[in-house]
Image (cartoon, rainbow, N blue to C red; front, side, top):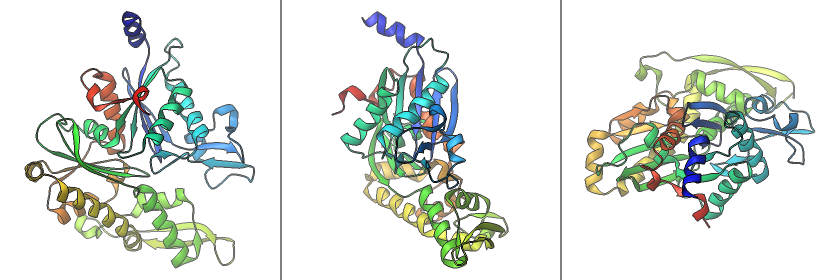
Length: 355
C-alpha cells in the first residue's frame, strides 16, 4: 500500500492553492504558478447553478460584477478569507483544479491550501470538504503567513525572528515566525476590500456618485497612496471617474485627486499599522531584537499600495521590504511546499486530522 501511495504521488499533480477573498492563485509542483483569477462565480439568482455549464468562474465571472441582469448573480464565495458559500466555493475550486490538472491521466491531485491564521475548526473543515468534493486526493492546510513567508524567501526554520505582513483582499495576516512556527500573530479582517470600500464611500458622500468595486479598485491602483506623493518623489494626480448619480439616477462623472483618495485610504492603512504594532509589542524581546536588522516583509496585493512600505517604516522604525511579486507570495509558498513536501510537513495540517 505504501508503494502504491508513493506511485500515485509521483504520477499525480501536487497543486498549491492560495484561496483568497479577492483572487485565487494556483501553483503546481512541476510548473510553478499557473493561474491567477478572481475568486468570483456567476450563478443563476437564488440557486447554486454556475452559468456557462460551470465555466462562469474567475475572469469570466468578474466581468459580470455589478453588470449582471436581474436573474444572474456574480458572487465572491469567500469573505475575510473563509468560506461563506460552501457549494459555490466547491464549484470554483473544481473549476480551477480541472483547468490545471487536465494532463495528469485522471489521477486526483494532492492539494496544499492556504488559510488565514486563527480560523475555527468548522471553517477549516469547510475548506477541506470543499476541496475533497472538488476532486482532491488529499488536502493539507498551511497558514497564510507561513506560506507568505516561504514564498517571500524568509528563513522560517531559523531560530531568529522573521516578520511577515500579508495584506490580501479580505484579511491582513501579521506574524512573527521562528523555528517554523508563528510565535505571535494577528489576523485582521481589514485589507484590500476595505480600501476599495473607502473609495466607494468617498465618491458617494462627496460627489453623489455611485461606483462599483472594480471602478474603486482602478482608482486605488491609478492614483491611490497613503503618504504625500512628494515623499515618494512623485507628483499628485487626478482622474475622471464615471458612475451613476445618486441625485438624478443618471450616468455622471467627476474628477477626483490623489489627495482625496489618500485621505480615504489612510485610516485603513493606519488600522493595519496599529495591528503591526500590537504584534511587535507582544513579541519576545530576543526575537524583537532580530527584527531591528531583519525588518518586516510585506506580501499580498496590498503591498503594492503606494507609500505603504514607507509609512510602516517611518511609523514603527524598522526596515520594510516588499516581496518580489507580492501578490504571489502565498502561492509561491504553497508551490515551495509541493516541491519539498516531506521537509515541510511540520508546517502543514492534514485535512483528515481536522475535526
